[in-house]
Structures are given as structure tokens and as C-alpha cells.
Image (tube, rainbow, N blue to C red):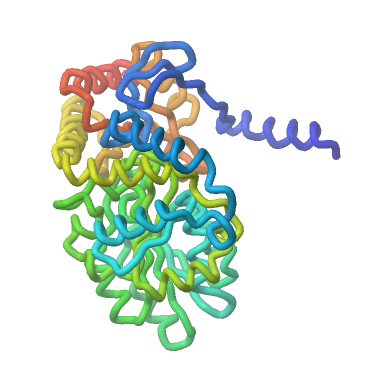
Length: 387
């Protein structure tokens, strides 16, 4: 078959299923209000949760780094790309999370597909939740380890798997999300960690959506649950609440040394550009210096969940700034998405395979700087388009 025939076959099937996707075009600085496909709209579809991506100090730090270091690192970290600002950012991240070291990756996806195969391989076992992020799923596949999946949040099923493999496998890795990106619930980390310790499993916590947004000091879902020091490996992103680009893994010095030598997505990639690194370092300091952003973010999320509930729309099981309203049908979900945009609100409809088939949803992500009137107006508009 020709390329065009293959594309036609695949895209035709996607249209039939109602899962065909296209990219919208957004204009303007990342903030609460942008132009979406030429239409002015309040943004409830992004991950810039603390509204730091266009903060003047973050922008100036990126510009200064571009002037001082250039716009590219110039190579992989193991050849010519390991700049002093990379090392400084990693030291800041380790101090923030209370770990010995940290190592930056270019994306959260690249972190998971690098870390998991570095820790587990043929004959080992990786255990993960049924709603794990795609990067965890693909990291498991690349590892060539046996993969055991337990139903979402089911601690009894998790213990049964860990008990079964504990005495027969050389290495067991439990890889879980801290905050589930499509449901907004927090993993039962205290119980999961206790089970991992009991059965000798390592714990990798992908806290992409928790970093900067949860916990007394913003250290994420582990701090929120009171178990920060019990996590073996913290994985976080620089491209969501921290308003820049990239990701990191934090843990022991031995972990960093292992990843530098064994994580292929780190070894064979150009390093993060200096402006991105400087922006992330500055945003990290701002997030710590301005805790009101984290407080306001969660206040806005609670207000949205509460108002939607009063209007008859469940947001379960969300307890965070990721607020879903499950519609079910693909076509109705996307019609609601378009109806919201016509009313001046952008929240993307999410369909399979991002969520299980039959659970298409509107996924709302309020920001720290949304006003209460904007939150209320969004909830009212949701009720209108779903009526």
C-alpha cells in the first residue's frame, strides 16, 4: 500500500469511531485568556496551572540565558551539552524535593521511557495501574519486562500481584501516577508504598501533575499524602505548573549515576536549551516564594467542582485541579466542546485512547489566576451545552 492509502485507511477508521483529531491554533501568551482558532476564549485546557509561563521574571530569565549561553545546548549531556545551568537546576530540584540528586530529561514521556527500561528488563516485573499514563505504558513495553496491570486504585489487587511475583523475580518495579491526568484523583500512595516495602518492590512516582500544585510546600502528591521520604524515585515535569519545558527524575546519587549510563532517552538526546532551563529554575523559585498560587489553584478547582455538582454534573473522582465531566459519547462530547468555545470557553474534549472507550469527557484545568466569576461562568456554560 502507498503512504496515502495507509493514511486514508487509518484516518477513515478514526472518523468512523469519532476519534479523529486535529490541532487547534492558539495565539497569544500562555495565560487565562488566549485566542483559539481565531476566537477569544478563557483557557481551561492547559497545564500552566500556576500561570508562570509568561511571568516577567521567568521570561527575563529565559532571555538572559539565551544571551549568555545561546539558544541551544549544542549536544547531548555526555558530549558537549552539559552546561553549568543544567547542574544548578538539578541541584535546585533535589533540594526542593529533599533528595540527594536529580537528573533533567527533555520531556516526561522521555523520562519514563528511559527510567523504566533502565531499572527493569527481561525476567523482571513492572507493575502499574490500569489508568497509567501512556509514557509509563510505553516504558513498560520498551523494558521487555513482564508487565502486570491492576485495576485502577485497587489495593487488594495490587497486593495480590506483588505477593505473587515477590519471591520469583529478581526486580519488581511499581510505577504509578501521583495525580491521574484524566480523572484528577490522587493515588493512595501511603498504602501503595507500604505494599511496595512489604513485598520488596521499588516505587517510581510519576508526579507530573502534582509537582508545584499539591502539598504544603508544593512538592507534590507524596507531600500531600505525607510520604515524601518513602518514595524511591520522584518524576516531575517542568512544562506544566513550572511554566517551562522538560522533566526530571529525583532520587539517590546511585539512581542518577545509573540513569546517566543506562537511560537511552537521556544518553541519545540533545540537552535542554539554556532558556528552558533558566525559565524552569526561576519558576521553581517563584512557586516556592508565592504559595498563594498553589492555594488559589486548588480553591478555584474546588469552586468549579462544587458549582458543577450543584448544577447536576459529577466531577468524580477528582480532588485536584484536573476536573472532568464524563459525557460518554464521542460526538456529544465534541459538540459540547465546540458549544463552549462559541460561548468563550476552551476546554478540550477527551476521547479514547486517552480515556477508556465510552468515557469521553470534557476536561477542565482551572488556573491559579482565574477569577471566581470566570469559574462560575464556565460551570453555567457547561450546564447549558450539556442540557
